[in-house]
Image (cartoon, rainbow, N blue to C red):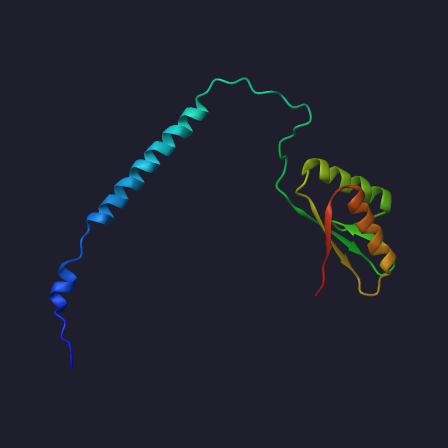
Length: 134
């Protein structure tokens, strides 16, 4: 026994009233929410000053430290010893506190102690570091 449906009546009974109700409720919600946000900005407050707060001077960047096979450190094409590299890393941390990263690119034949030395210098400057691989 087959049942026949009248498709014209099924589609004709679709009501848009609930959809319109939902749209009006969303509109009212967003109007009220933006009004509260404006009131919070209009409060007359004297904010405290922070002596150690610093604006972000430069965009977060990655520093590439290259470690040669013989243990020399290269930064921006210059050969640096450990003391100078430590000063550069500390200065970059002061310019971008919390956002500075160092990527160590070590020659595959370099000794592990040189890579660990760069990692220790990064740690002393509170900078996260990672090791680049192919």
